[in-house]
Every structure is written in structure tokens, then in C-alpha cells.
Image 1 (cartoon, rainbow, N blue to C red):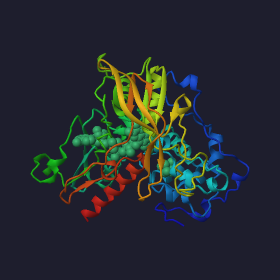
Image 2: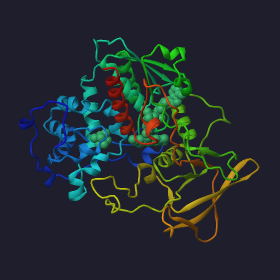
Image 3: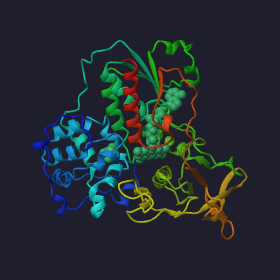
Length: 467
Ligand SMILES: Cc1cc2nc3c(=O)[nH]c(=O)nc-3n(C[C@H](O)[C@H](O)[C@H](O)COP(=O)(O)OP(=O)(O)OC[C@H]3O[C@@H](n4cnc5c(N)ncnc54)[C@H](O)[C@@H]3O)c2cc1C
Ligand code: SF4
């Protein structure tokens, strides 16, 4: 059995549930496509309380909670599902926030690594609905007034600067503040959240959810300074006067550099990095105004998304809401295996199988094994993209498979191209021993749940440094 930090009376706590034998997995599902593509409201719906408790009751307390192992935060899904099934929302909330500082984020956008590792996924591909349960617990806690700022935190006299207000920086700031450190967060953007705010579209995560949490953190004593871009090189020496006021610094600056595609035509008007579109759209929804020449929009255009991952999928959903004419998504790698099982990466590991998101359901021509050769234009404007179908063959010399061309190049008509090919892992200079790096800035582009876990682990490391 994996260890558990929260003290609970286990013998009276968990009921051995057999309800999974009778109750099927029920997801809340999405709003109908024709309804949702006309707005940026969250697409996911919610179950009613009775249905939610039934879903939580499906957790069978299998004894070897692979869900707990798979969750980077070590969330104790069996424990809070049991409390939820019994209607003890307050206990469920206390157990959930014992490991997860911001369940309202993960409850909305976590890919739920835990659910793939659930024993019920192995049994009949109907794992428990942990992510949705998590969201229901925290939303009920907010609704019932259980989520209150911690007051009367006793201060230890030490000051910490956190650079970057994405999920990693926020998690580190949250934990250090509760430990008694005086925390100041420096953020280059005009508001907090990092990619939660300026990457993930509003239709997956309503930004009021971030503001609600921010307000609590400010009430708990964390100071935020926005519009402050900090030079990381200056932190290599202790001569930076501003930071010499701090006893320690946490760098949580994410992966600011997206992978680009420097092929002929890259400078044509209409070729953009995915985040240029996504961040601008989120800012526009927050009320920011953009000039006509500055605004990137898919309205009335044929859109080509290059990159088959989640960022690409967010571009598809955004393009639909902006009123695009068509969307095609191309990926250089082969089409992943279909179905729930991945023979290359079997349960309880994460299956690298074909993922169809809510945005794909809204309409998209998806193609694999396509290499991009050249952006084509008339004058300065993009009109299409020359691509080449390819195949991957085993490399007789071993190592990376060989890319071989198949047939003739073709042109995909496009007036807007979005490059969604991932992010470069940042390189860091050698920092003094009181400077710590966490989240994507340390590990490369990943997931919100991993950023939160990294922020928490780094806060604990920093605290140990001063002991
Ligand atoms: C489009 C998109 C969609 C995604 N969707 C999901 C999803 O659905 N689920 C999921 O789990 N993950 C998703 N991810 C990944 C997830 O958002 C990231 O892994 C996570 O946000 C990383 O957190 P972080 O705090 O390390 O970095 P970030 O979120 O990148 O935050 C870094 C912060 O540091 C600030 N900063 C950078 N440099 C400086 C500086 N020099 N001075 C001051 N501030 C600075 C930035 O402005 C930013 O606010 C998505 C990513 C993208 C791009
Ligand atoms: S944070 Fe993600 S992996 Fe962890 S329990 Fe919640 S949904 Fe599962």
C-alpha cells in the first residue's frame, strides 16, 4: 500500500465497494457541438449530485491504488472517492487538498493519468471518473464556503522570490507561504496563470477559476508583481541588488520558446506559432483590444495546424469559434494505435493511443505521416503549404527510423497556418545554491499536474535547505 500523509481511521473509512459491478462509468460529456462552437464557454458539462456520488462509489478500494502512483501529486483518489460516495463532501475536500493545492485546475484540464492506471481500466476499460470527481468536490467546497483563506500564518522571517506565475510558481508560492515564508511572485505578463491563462483556451478552463484562486492567495499574504520580466542571467551572481533582499529564489518560467519551422516562406503573412493565436484569443476574451493588422483570426480561412498534439487540438477548437472555413491538422509521425490498449506501453502506464478531443469532434481533417516542405504565397500573403506524404522505415543501422518519401508532393490550401510542434527545453546557467528551478522550466514542456507537483517538491526542497 502506498503511504498516505493525511491521518484517517482507515478501518472505519473505506467501504469495499462492489458497485462497479452494476454501475457503469458515466462521463458528464460535452455541450452539443452546434451549441458550443459559437462561444468560448467551457465545453464540459457536470453530473448531478446523485450521479456524481454513484460514480465515486465505483472505486473498489482495490488495495493497490495505481491511480495514486500514476498521479504526480499522489492524489488519494480512493480515499476522497469513498468520502464523496458517502456524501461527506467536507472530508473529501480536506483529503483532496491535502495533496493538491488547486484541484479546480486539474479537475478541468488534467488528462487524468490516474484513470488510465485505474484497476477498473484494466478490468473493463471503465475506470473511475477521478478527474470529474475532483472538480465536483472542489466546486462544492467553494459553493459551501469551505474554501477560506488561511489566516494567522506565523512568519519565519525569510523572504522568497518566485519568478513566473504559472502553475509551478503558484504551487511553490502557495506551499512556501503556508510554511511561513514571505513570498513575492514576479510575472512578466499582466496577470497570473502562465499557460493556464494564456495557452489553454477558455472553452477548457474559464479564467474566472484562476482569478478566484488568485484572490485567496493574495488574501493569504502572497504579493504579486505583474509586468515584471526578470533576467535569469542576473540571478547567477549575487550582485543583483533587487534579489539580494531575498533569502532564496524559485525560477518557474516555463518553456518560453516554441519549436519553429524555418522552411521557405516562413515569413509570409498568415504563418504563426500556435501560442500567438491562443494567447491573443484569451487576451481578447479578457477585454484586451488589438488593431486590425495585429489580430490573428481564422475567420473565413482555411486553417492548417502543423503538429498533432494537444496544443494543435486547442488551435482547432479556437479556429472553429473564430469562424474558420475548414481545419486540417497534419502530423509528421504515424497515426497512433487505436483503442484503449497500447501494446508498447501497457497498463498501468499511460497508453500512447489515438486521442480524439472535444475540438476534433467539432470537425477536422486529421492526417499523419505528412512532412511540410514550403509555405506558398501570393505577394506577402500565405495561400497554401506544399507537403509530402512520407513513410517511416526501420533503420538498418539501428536508432531513429528513416523517413522515406511516398508519392508526389501536394499543396494544401491555407490562409492561416498554426505551428504547434512543441517547445524547446530551456537551458539554465549555473545558479547559486539558494536558486531553485521547477515546473516546465526544469523538466521541459509537460502537464499542469506535473508542474504543480514540481512546484510543491521544490518548495519542500527550499524549506529543507534552510533547516
Ligand atoms: C496550448 C497549451 C495547452 C495545454 N493544455 C494542457 C492541458 O489541457 N492539460 C495539462 O495538464 N497541460 C496542458 N498544457 C501544458 C501546461 O500548460 C504546462 O505544462 C504548464 O502550464 C507548465 O507550468 P509552468 O508553471 O512550469 O510554466 P508556465 O505555465 O509556462 O508558466 C511560466 C510563467 O513564467 C512567466 N515568465 C517566463 N519568463 C519570465 C521572466 N523572465 N520573468 C518573469 N516571468 C516570466 C510566464 O509569463 C508564465 O506566466 C498545455 C500547454 C499549452 C501550450
Ligand atoms: S490530478 Fe490528474 S492524475 Fe492526479 S488524481 Fe487528479 S485527474 Fe488524476
